[in-house]
Image 1 (cartoon, helix red, strand yellow):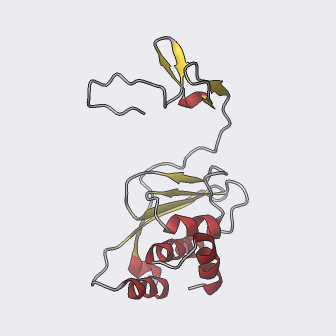
Image 2: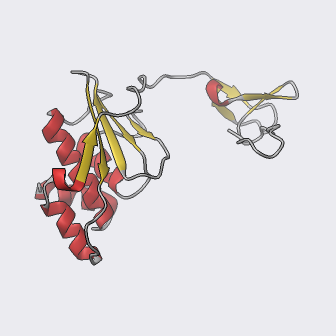
Image 3: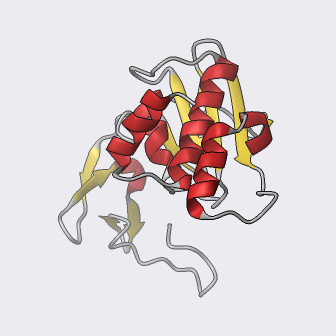
Length: 178
């Protein structure tokens, strides 16, 4: 484990925890297996399948952030991360393996940080394609609330351009609003 990366991640996240350790270990594995460097723009993309503590490590260590558009959230709830390198067209997906025994919080954190990544994660190719680069969209003003939103997030409702908050879905009880 790279103690400098751990300390930097803890400083950003605010405390030590096993979830942050998972993110640090996932980043270290991606860096080692894919020869990654810090992403200044969108050279590296991470698709996280969770919104847990480990995602903070991804931001600090890899430079993948929501703001740059190279950190994407795919809500499966799984402790899985997929990394894509646009420079050399490589990718990897890793998902945490179930622990073999019950551990206290501090013991679990130490185990994750000090165990080889191949024992902690299952590695495979992502089962989805590299997402396109972030795009800029024209902002449209909602005709109901007056707030602006990007055009791809607008809907038509009773002939008016409305944002997702104002949109009244017609789903008869089984569809999703978005």
